[in-house]
Image 1 (cartoon, helix red, strand yellow):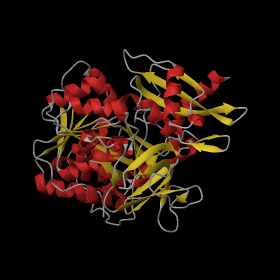
Image 2 (cartoon, one colour):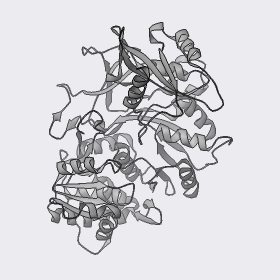
Image 3 (cartoon, helix red, strand yellow):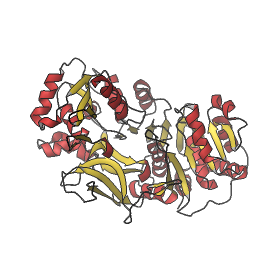
Length: 501
């Protein structure tokens, strides 16, 4: 098993199709395959142990992913938004390496011991020049395909290991070969250092879809590219979809008749955003995909029919599924467990555990986090209903402990989001002398709507126990999210704790 076999099948099956487009430049599937072989030969000759990619979305990213697999080197995409000190620390962990980066960064890495630096243009030019391809690639399923660094918000970033077997298993279990029409196009704007960026490359190649790359997201550019390239498929994080909805304010529809499918994931989707999006894109299928770096991307999906059924239903339990992440993919098992490790029943909140062939749960230098039966503790909190629909409740360690009572921030956020004036909400625990922790909330109001703290406290009191009523509510213009749509809860917690004194 090797991800190169996915590209080989694509090149043999539809080699003249356009594979990736970035501005005026492009690769066909056969062109990408040939370039990967030549780039692999250069990588093997370099003596490097890793291929590090420090770049925004560019044609160098898919080339690097496949060339490294052909060469037998782990591919290491690095967050280009990190500080220079943080980037240096990560590079130290993967030396000796070939580093591909933007032209303006080359000089800052030139001459470093153990680092062969190339601009993206140089890397692409070498791969497109005359030269022989590397000898045949390894088919050892245990080979490391990708190293992905975690965000490191609570300490030194961990390097999650994704082996060839994990990535290939995910693609074969979730994508049908050559399922895309020849003129289908996917608009990809998630960063290349995110697991969703890796998954978008592999799934698009296996399905035979043309990928239009967007390096720096803005709603206006996204809409312009989707129309110009007649995009049929797109993946966004919730904050991106919210910006697209805002950009279409006042419009009856998005006017994108070719756009058949939008997938979203990477964070919690506010109910108001997805409901408005479904009205603006009436002919588009929506899919919510939930996954983690350690699981090779998606493990649960809320599909298009689930979305339609939830919107059309008068049953509160069915309608609530619109804010779920759906049910487990075939070949994936999900459990909800208590702190003591007991498997919980439907509706009970605990930590999400997952098991399956695509699940890695392994970190460089730290070994495997899987238990003896192969289950991976995600550190995400959640619950499942009786039909297996999974509901996320934030991180397991985000639980608020007030007077010995455990409270889920997500439960309180869901209630606040049901208020007609609330567009977004984040709930955190803040220090409280009497109770240990108190409940606080940052709330974003919808444009033109009004509500005060007392009204929202009363709203929560109507729907939940009084102990869950936020003692402090602040109104913010926006909530802090990272570029992949994750709420920066620690920032909210710090600000609200400071305000509470």
